[in-house]
Image 1 (tube, rainbow, N blue to C red):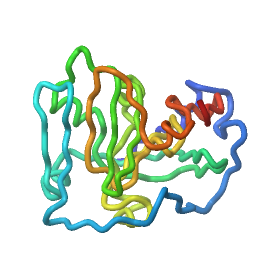
Image 2 (image 1 turned 60 degrees about the horizontal axis):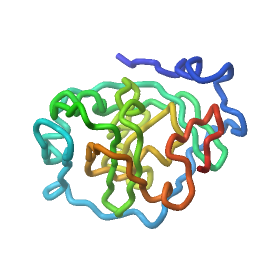
Image 3 (image 1 turned 180 degrees about the horizontal axis):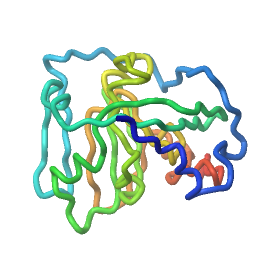
Image 4 (image 1 turned 135 degrees about the vertical axis):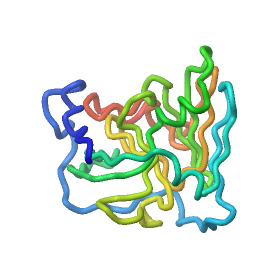
Length: 197
């Protein structure tokens, strides 16, 4: 069963297509550098920081977590949007519940196999549609689109959705990720065109 979350735009604006965006049927590939290698035998996903219990998962263990499929829209900060993307994976809420988030946690830092990082306020992560996705439109997520695992954040620009994600850290104070240190918005709301800080 697919959970359709494409109506979430109503929380942020009147139009499904955010201002300054153009709809495309393509799914362009963008990243800060090349596609990193990964080995399913040694890959590890960690949950650390301000939590009751830090967690570590092998690829098989991560794939054994309860999964779900969602239909989402995808908004790139460079000005294109793709509607009705079908992603399958594990929700952020599932991992947060398993780790037990401390009361003083306010921010989340996401990390990736290629060294990329991005941050979001905790409240922007504790939403049903924030997903660690391993499938796209019924197929395993391709490596150029962030496979084996990427984050999708349909309520934020896609640079907040880390490709090749391998961990999250719950923080008690905000920190800046890769693009945020280079002048991009920490909040990244497409309907407010929060592209840059």
